[in-house]
Amino acid sequence: MSRLAALSTPQRRARTSPSPSPSPAPASPTRAAETTHHRMLKLVLAEVNNVINTWDDIVAHDGLKAGKGCIDEVTEMDNILLLPEGPERPLVAPHLDALTAYRTALQGVLTKLEKLLSKLAALVEQSEKVFFEACKVQTWDFVLTDPLWLSWTLENFVDSLPPLVTAHSKHLGELTSLANVLLSSSTSFEDARTALERWRDLARGGERWEVVREWEELVQLETGRIGPEEEEEQARPKRRGKR
Image (cartoon, rainbow, N blue to C red; front, top):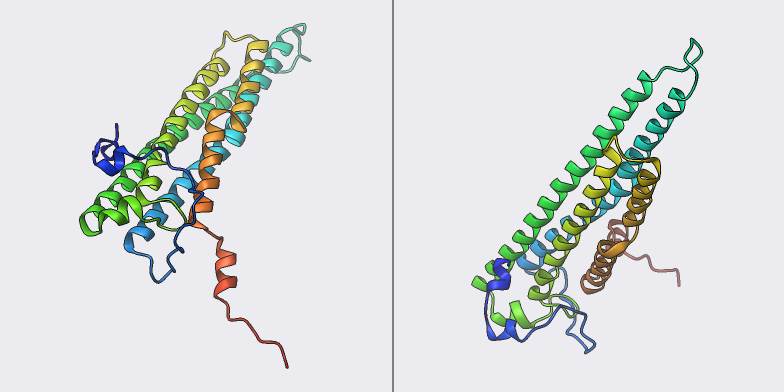
């Protein structure tokens, strides 16, 4: 249980999982009216989003490439060994070297994901620090009742992060099991191909994918975040047309 979850107040016990409120919310604070805690939370949310995007890329590209390479090189070596011995038979050594490289790359993928999971957990702790700092200098209404932008309170934002750690931890566990199948020398071609197909499914679907995409959509809705290009466009003075 996180330190934030352990905090017991009447307001927190009465609350459920964060979700956008259907009732009208006060207008979002202007950029000038945002507090330090608004800005600190935005930084944490941006870093969480970076972790999610990096995770997606590693699993969908690096992981699939390494896993497919393991299967292809083993298949090539098996085919070569079926050929009659002789000077015309291709060498196995280059494929063995390539297999070693792909296996190392696949193990590296798992290592990268472990580091990202640790970073995500650290960001959850950072968000809780923002919460507790706000408790010290702001009112309880600011922390537990007042929407930061649309309808979510600071508490809602912080409470939305731990489920991401759980989803990524489960995801890494599944990917590790599949990687072990692909890395094993005793794995059959059919089992390896099944493992690779499952990896591909997990790269663009499954529980973690759904949890992450829902979180991204809700946070984007709640913060009304815009890209750098749009920020520049909004900041640029508008020219008046000729009368």
